[in-house]
Length: 282
Image (tube, rainbow, N blue to C red):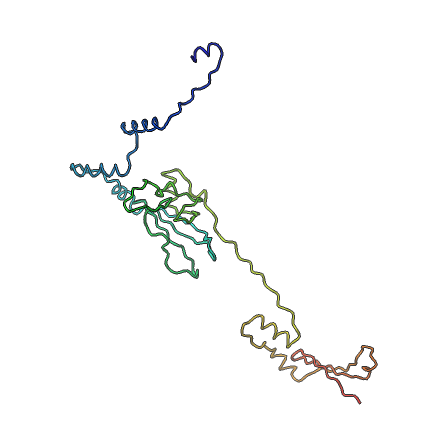
């Protein structure tokens, strides 16, 4: 039919896949499982290992071989978590990924005088899952996988730690070399700068003098919680003590009742104070 239409210059188009119903899908799946086309589950692999033990054939222990090849090899990441709760702050972490058994340990990186308790363990060493779930009853089968593996940890991206979004911002030299050698990934390319900007404190000007007492006494109350009397100039007190400059003055406001009033203005150079006296008139 296709040849006939092509000879007559008619394009029939590409073949479309046949619509499969539920029976055809289940039949194809069963035939694929019979031929061994499906990957075995963890339970099936454990059953095979148990059978090898029963017949006396020593199986290859993958976990033991992984431990022998990767013991004391630890990936070290630097991370932080922004606490969104009330009065929350940014908390920095050190993440250790143990290649010997694919477990993770997270410790808090406390700074000096941070005010936090000296208990750095945030996540005890153990397997960490990407998505946490609770079984309906004990012994219930769960899906295989879901663990965080080395290929899931990248600087500049975040991981889920029990509902907390932890961002990886740097790693050490061994981690950089490991990813570059085995995965051809440059972890330092996406390093995040977490340095905080320096705080700029604005200096407030002292309030104006209200006229009560001396200006030095009012200013010392703004500088100290327990104010002390201002220090006097001892040299001026020793040289100019007892000296005063006196001036005679009168009112210049143009009022007739103030024409006969006389004043004496005295300036004391040892303390830079001024006194005004009114002379008694008859």
